[in-house]
Image (cartoon, rainbow, N blue to C red; front, side, top):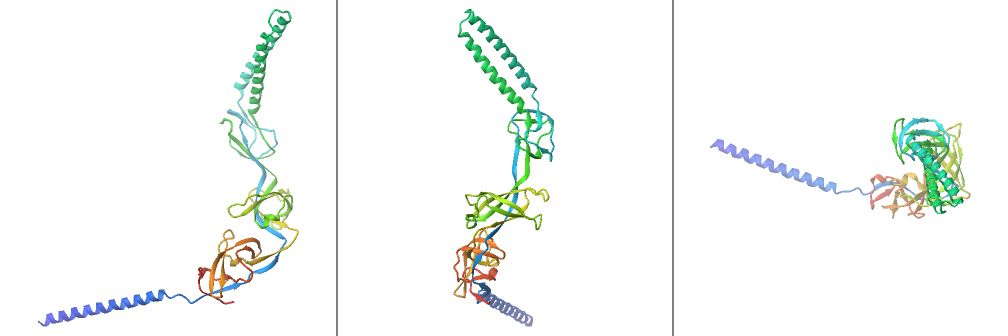
Length: 353
């Protein structure tokens, strides 16, 4: 009897302890949930006012060099390559033979055509004599004359085809790539080689819609190649894009003469420095105020000194550590420069500077 009493007391104690523990855990979870709902009263940030500055009368834009002249050598004939005369890396003048294609069948056909043409001309001479002696009607000679014209046209065509079996360089330059070897079989339209001329280069840069209005065709530009620090090359604007790309920038093409003492190659980077006639004013912000990239720029604007508002803006040129803002911001509005990582639209803030 006493043992049963002990068992009941032990069971009661365990149930009471479990109930107490569960209630304690529930209170702790409820307390943590309430804490998770508590947000900071404010986020400390730094902010500045945009400055209305006199912008420099120059513009810098990064770009990549491209060859001014580059093209593929295309086959205009079909057959087996008998010989290749030029190797990759060799300088080739316009009109020089790069490769020779088998033309034996074309020459055989040309000989047959020339023999037929000679026979037709002799027949023409005989018939002319007969017509003059009134031994043959005049209309008989018309058929022979038409045959001669057809044979002469075929002869010209065959000579042209034979000429095309000598694949020549369409321009002067370096044979950068060669896609055929001796014994290769090619056909019309097949790429035989690629030629590049680096005597002149194009520097392709992109400028914003505001700056493109100041860039003029024929304008002189200073080009500073990245591979030669301190070096400067004179360039000239040869083309200005008429249509913006998806990032709302315009292509500008600058022609430069490849210097012999500091040779450049396609794909190298350089900075183009444009100089304009007059200065202009514009609103600028520190570059660190821009959230994201310059292709999709946004800023946090301080509203009533306590709230942050995210806003899309348009930017112009970059002037060192400052960026020109051309739209989406008014003079006198404060812009957050530090602390943006902790912000969201409508977040409460405290400006500490």
